[in-house]
Image (tube, rainbow, N blue to C red):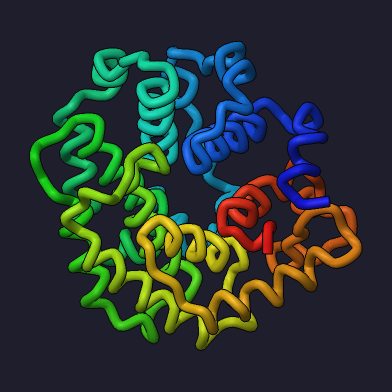
Length: 289
């Protein structure tokens, strides 16, 4: 049985948060209507107050390295999550709560933190996903006619990957691609940044090949998804990632990411805890090969 079919059959066993993540990824990436009823019946709350108040970033990967920057940009964890909620409600339900967002967190403050992050190379390199998402979602939802994807891409291409954490560098590049796609909801056919995005993925391919034995498997599989989005392939890296996934999937109904946690019975080995990497695995195309 394919991983996709297994998750479809056991969808009800996931938490609501994981169900929503899985359903929206299937809907937007594969343009399927399989989860229309679920999404219609499980619209997220429009109240952003609890999201802003959640500043517990203690479970993020690379916590010790990222902690100083979460402290420097106080509230960033909640701000990024609130921006995502606004994005999801707008894209999935045509519900616009941007005025509610700015009633809780002023537009001037949001522009200020986005601009500070954009000029803070160390923060971008270390926070990677949280910095990139905040910068790009700010421009997507509250546009100033600024091509932040171009700015971030050009900045990233000037970095020396050998001087950066391999996993964080790949996440930096993949999330620039994902932001350009407005998280799978926008086609890149008309993108003016395609050449830059291809160069980012080329740089990521080199990092993955060099660090294939140690790099985060989540980041590596997300790289394959981004390659599909942009329309570029790196066969050697794909084959190497596929071999690791096949090994970690062996004797299981879904992919278990032992690189993230080797502890027997770990949460990340459960259907729920493994949802993130498995939805990426499905989207990468490896599940059907």
